[in-house]
Length: 200
Image (tube, rainbow, N blue to C red; front, side, top):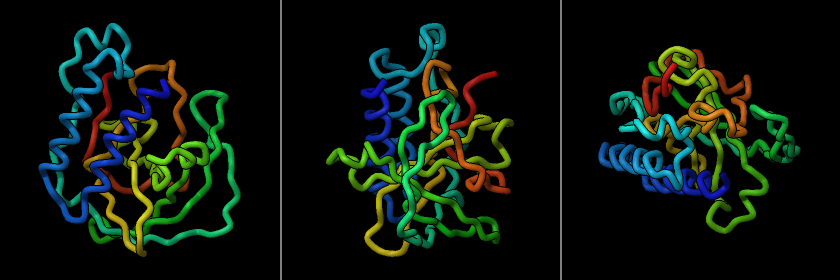
């Protein structure tokens, strides 16, 4: 499981790193590589039954309006905590900051987190975790919300491309243990971007 998670994080993480302005080709490449990983038995979180008939994940149409530049506020002196998951496991995270942005003329705030164990690995030392849910969750999108991988910014702005949001592995297979989206990261807006729910 750890190898699979590392691969998926690297994919999402690298694409997020690359973006400073909206680029449709980056999203297309992200989707292509995500599909390739899910189609490969060595890296796929799918069950054997679903993998046998897998062709593609279901994505929302690429949406330029889902690409936002946010204000990044570093939150100091936060205490590490055990992140609730879909199982009894509670990996240690720390709230690293807040992102403030606008969508459809409304102001929103999300917390971003740092996985303490993952941050000890050189390739993920700048990795930030952004879990969120929105008004599509439980309808067109997975009921448990979605994730976006970000890089610690050099300054006080950060790019968030919801087109690069992906489902937790629990959306595909109940054997996985997935962080739950904190209540404070539930958005009162429809985010029609990224991966849709798998199947009912």
